[in-house]
Length: 201
Length: 243
Image (cartoon, rainbow over all chains, first blue to last red; front, top):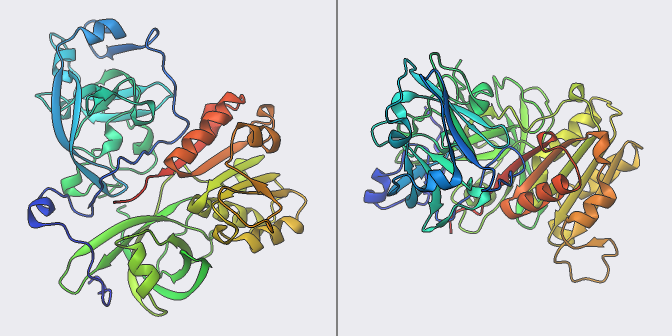
C-alpha cells in the first residue's frame, strides 16, 4: 500500500484532460528539451535520410527530395518518460508509410539513427499504418535544432525518446536490437498507457 | 528485474537556499546508486490520486540513505508539497536509481568538468561528494552559475572540499547579484569563461552539464565550439515546469 501523504491534494486536471493523460504523467504547457549531449547542428545541404538494413534495396533522399514527398500535418498528444505530457502538438512531415512504400522486407524491427549518434529501436508495426512520421515542422515553423531539427522521428503513441531527434535513417532488422536509452535501462517498447518506463515495467 | 517502488522515510531536512531544501531519506532495500543518477518520487493523496516527478540524487552512494535537493517551483505540484509539508518521519514512495548515462565513478577516469546552472548542480554535487568520499585524486573542476549569492547550492561544502584538496577547483559566477559585496565573478557561463576555466580539449575531460534548457544548450554549444569532443559532453536538461 502506498503511504498517504498527509494533506496532499495535488493539482488535478479536469476529467476530460485527465482521460488523455497516461498514468504518472502531468500536463506541461511549455516544450521541455531532453537530450543526452550537445545539440548537433545539421546542414540541409548535406542532410540525407536513408532506409537500409534488411531491405531489397536501400534508398536515400536529399533534403530537397525529401521535401518533395507528400507530407501530412498531424495534431497529437506527446508523452515524455520524464513525466510531462503535452496535448495537441502540431507537426508536419512525411509518414513512414510513404518512406517504406514498395520496400520488400522480412524485418520485424528497426533502429532509428540520428546525427550525433543517437539510436532507438522499434517494432516495425509501431511505425506503419499512420502511426509515425519524419517531422520537419512544429507548430507551422521549421523544427528547431534543440527539438530535433532539421527532422525528427515522431511516434506519438510511444514515450518521446522513441521519436529520435536529428533522425537520418531507419535500419530495418530481423531481430530487436536495443538502442541508446534501451541499453541504459529504459523499456524496450515504451507504451505510456502501460507505463513502460524502465526495463521490467 | 522491474525497478520497484520503495518506501522512503524522511530522516531529516535542511534548507539550502530560500527556495530549495535537501531531504534525507532512509530507503530500506535501496539497491544503491551511482553519482549523477535520479529517482522517481510518487505522492498519494487520501483519495488515491497520485503524482510523480523525477529528482536528481545529491548524495554519493551511501548504503540505504539518499538525499534529494528539490527546488520549490512556483505552483509546483510535488516540489511545493515537499517544501511546505514534508516532516521528519513522513513516508513517500521512491523508485530508482534511474539513468545510466549521466553518471560518473572514479573508475571512469578524468579529468572531470562539471558545469551546473541553478538546481542543475544537484547531480554534479553527487559526483563531487563521491570523488571526495572515495579519496580520488582525479582532477576536477566544478563551474556553478546561480542568480544571486543566496541561490548558490552547497557553497560552504564545495569551498571546504576545494580548500582541502588541490585537485578540486570551484568556480562560481552570479547572473543577477546586485550587491557590491559580491566580489567574485558575474555573468553567465559563456564561451569566454569556459575558455578560461575548462580543461584544454586535448585533456579529453569527462564533462557533465546540467541545468535549464537554455543554459545547457549554451554551455554545450560553447564547449563544442572550443573543440571539446561532443561524445564526451553529457547533458541533462530540465525545462520550466508547468505554467
